[in-house]
Length: 294
Image (cartoon, rainbow, N blue to C red; front, top):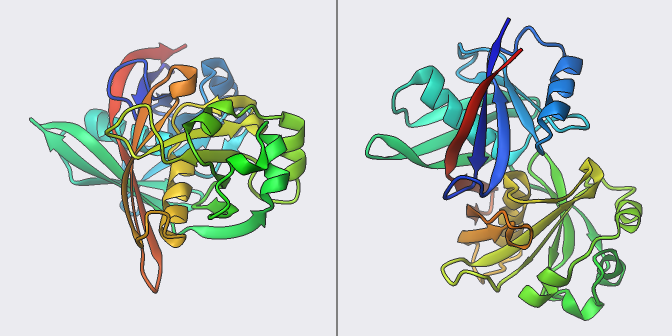
């Protein structure tokens, strides 16, 4: 049986920017091992497998793999797969698409321009806040001095389904200077669920953006990710909880991937109420190529 696949750029304003994704249709007959093998052959940070083109409980069953393992949730695969379902399965404008994952059902909302999807927004799960790390322990892992970490805010583990350690830096120079020591990074995170790290600063390459971000994914065998929706969802919750911009509400533009020549744009919204923290991560999707597995 031939299965059609699609290569997408997610969180991208144009082709060959953002984070690339392979989406494979008609995947219900594949075993987990076969999905992992295909993902390794694709060699992107993640590939998604659409198990059915009929909605179940209002959503579409999807599995996500990295070249190393299956993961319960990730951001750019969610937006990319929802875009593909709207374009190739539903084939008409709809306000939202629901995806069924191990972590639960994730909603993706659409805005349209001239009948075509413009921005996609995923509603992420309630963030969970974990361990806080001493900046003096974090700095050498990143090749930095402790003074380059913004001590007004914590270095903290946050998860909306996939955990990351969030590290606030003082400026763009500190972000650019980061060079992770993989062994030291994994030793630091040995006793936490998080194995990957996001650093950010309130100084940007593009003046219309609010934050510059880098995400280090050494644990996944990818030193740096160009656009990471799950990590930025964690960041959105962190920004709201810690009142980074002086408010419980967050509405910001985040640039990522500039240091590895994959310039991406992510849109973050969050609100911390007395009951919960709601998070949305948005961006655009661009089709790069299609093909068939043989």
